[in-house]
Image (cartoon, rainbow, N blue to C red; front, top):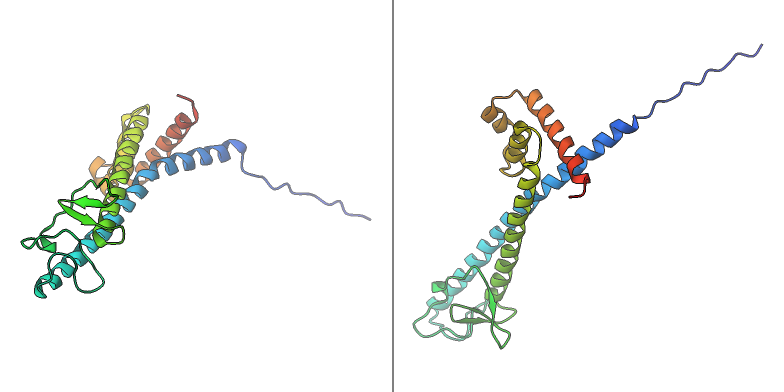
Amino acid sequence: MELATTHVAVRSPKPRRRRRRLIIIDAKEYLEQARFLDIRINAKLAQLDSLKHLLLIAGDAADDASLRGTQCRGNLPICSALTDTQKPADFKFPLKASLSEGGARRAEGVIATDTSPVSKILSLQSDINRDIDSLVNLKAEITRRIGQLSRPEYQTVLELRYLNFMPWEMISKRLRYSMPYLFKLHTRALEELGKNLEEPE
């Protein structure tokens, strides 16, 4: 006698539920752009401080050796236009870099070659300026998108989390919401935002 075999169908996630997850993921990735760009800017600012510190050390070494004018000791040449009364450590670097007609970058009367620390500092500052401009524009766009959500609670949660970069515990205390309720609001806010992002403006 042959026994009838039963086949158990494995249920796959419902298409609607899968689509909901994708919408939420897309919305979260969209919002996370601001935080990642902010992290990049802070990393570059730390690099900038390190380069300026090295430049000041080189300036002090040049001053101690009475080397002013054309070069400094060591592997950190400073500038080629220092006067007798100017020290490398006296220079403050502008936030914006500009190019002279001869192709050399100038910083408050100091000419820096493309391989000098001054040139590297100005190049890094230029990168930071561009990133800051991008971050300001991105935050403005995200703020506009969040402002289109239907509930003020959704807007507040997303603004605190993705524009102010606040941890969940702090948001919970600020709004006096329990963590489970806060996460529920967050998920619903992301879902609505994700649907709005799919619609052409």
